[in-house]
Length: 88
Image 1 (cartoon, rainbow, N blue to C red):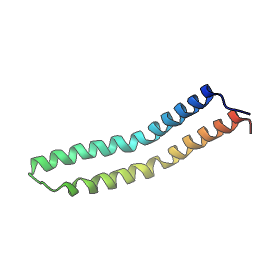
Image 2: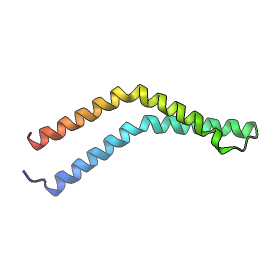
Image 3: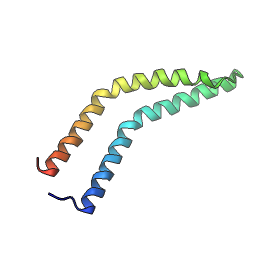
Image 4: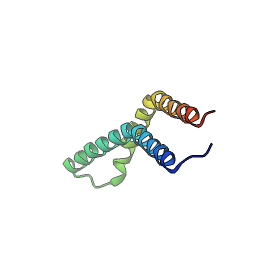
């Protein structure tokens, strides 16, 4: 079975949308933590840039661990839909 150009573009679009959906919770939380830590650094006149890295790393890791079952289930659903679409 050959893939037409439209099907290939549609598969790429679906894959990119899934990647965006799966990365969104981690990126949003990291952005919020970055803004809050930046505000706190401004309020307390701290100039060290490495201070904002540690809270973002810890919170992003916790969100990743919390979302991991959901991420895997979405990836498995997408993979199964690919296999069904290919005809395997």
